[in-house]
View: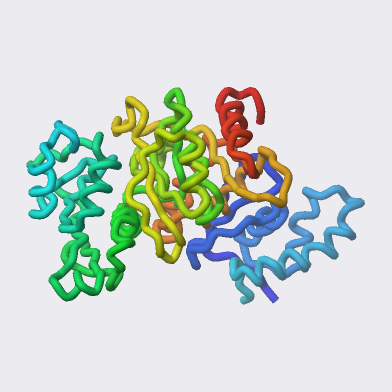
Length: 89
Length: 305
């Protein structure tokens, strides 16, 4: 199942471990982990399923962290879906 | 422009009865009308040093608090009118003054969307402003009153008006609303504090307002830079302390304390971002007022935090 972000909203981050995200579709503002905000930006580039998303971000990740990351990404995606900031196509 | 206390008492009351008393309060002009003695006394005590608005200028908020006739007078009921509309229904006469102040706040709360508005007390020293957002009961007004009585300038007890795109706050100086135990606490803190009429049976309990335009520049309308945001919390159960908090978490909490963040949409997000970029954020947990004052002074001086 493809996941998408449209339109991508606005981010506020001042070098902390959380990011504020404004979702223009709902007008809601959310506090996200920086990793969740990073995934959101990736999904805004083009719709992807979770496997494609992990493949896309893998070059940015320490190889030894990829197994753990693969387990973690679906949970973060579920949280973003619960916030209605991503859509399933 | 002359001040309210420059008016002879007879002229003051005549203007108030006729709805021609107009006061300049921060960026706004209020037109006021009343036939109630407690409003006479309250305004005279708490707004004595406010400038009369220029008669040529636009009146932003026309307010009337009055008995509508002999029946309502006998029933001890009054009504609050904003532009001749009654948004609150009947009000007990004994609570008229508190409702006048709340009504004046309400006008700004539901209008004035040219600003990002936070529900916050605002105080300043040496030209630098500190915002203190908080839910009712958090202790922000008590702290604000004590700071005002200790040499700080009170820019507002209710609204922080932030022009979008700036990290500044527009002064909206108003009396500080004290409730229940805070009234005696502030009277004990400084016996010279000027308090208006006491409203004894409101949904918030006993309420009295304190004259807060005590600084020489209280009515200067120039916006001041905001350097700090403090979220005060009165608690007898938690240890006192001043704790740094993250800007992103403070962003969310400040948005929660805003009257119109959501209404402004993307513009509100950008306005809050600009404000937070310039602002150090703290939680202040206190139960001892003197300790809290010292903490605020040290925070302002840069000796803690």
